[in-house]
Image (tube, rainbow, N blue to C red; front, side, top):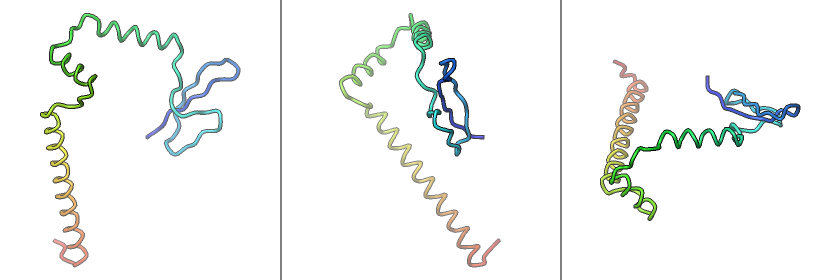
Length: 115
């Protein structure tokens, strides 16, 4: 079952309530889409955990170079761009073949050439 998350603040307690609703459902007025803003404590905890996780893990020279290039506005390397282009070409070819096969099946069933 697919669902979406909605939140609201309880008027009595002031606490945030997060609830799942069906994808097609539209909850009443006080509910807002998403999970809402983090409390300062929850945000600080997340930041601290991220710092602990990454602390003491040095970046490779390649990673530092990529970060420096990204900061200067260079998006992807030539190799990466070539891989992306090849991937998209393969996806287009597979889609084309699937569509042709589906069309052949549809046409054969219309013409009465069922196997």
